[in-house]
Image (cartoon, rainbow, N blue to C red):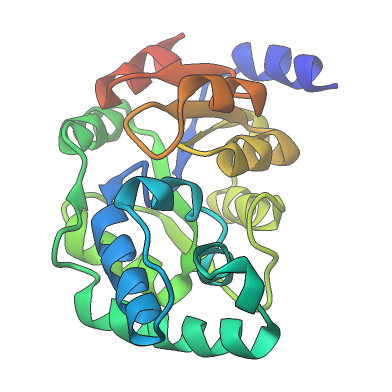
Length: 229
């Protein structure tokens, strides 16, 4: 089934691109790491190195905090309390170290010149997703920006991706989905879009390919090769 979807997508002219946010468009790992570690330290729990957070992020705030907490103390009350504390910490420090990855500006310029519609779909809370796009990517038009909302299942459920396709009035088979984690690749496949993994983000190439990445790119400008296929 997946191979058939890939074949169909390869033979279409692409009309839109949906991007993941953290690890794909913006490098936010240090701010996320620092906010989470402040919460852990405040509660006398062990903290983690930034590299560890590459595997904690990607599935929303609750998953991030759950993975960061020591196994022996995890329960619903502690998780909920620490999630609330993280939101407050991150609200104060979301833009200290975060910035677009090198080459993102040039890539977005090239896509704009090609006339493709652009959107963002993230498991980051919707408020912060919109805030980050406005702050770090203000010079480009994103037709739809969606983060995690209580009434919509988070990725890899395809609901958000399909909502964007419907809003853009573009068939899923005409959409490239770009992300840096297995969650993104699974989302693209479930939505019937072309899954493209990026290597400047949080996860390695073999992990992306195992999760269904049809193309893997090392530099942002390589997305044009995918568009022009």
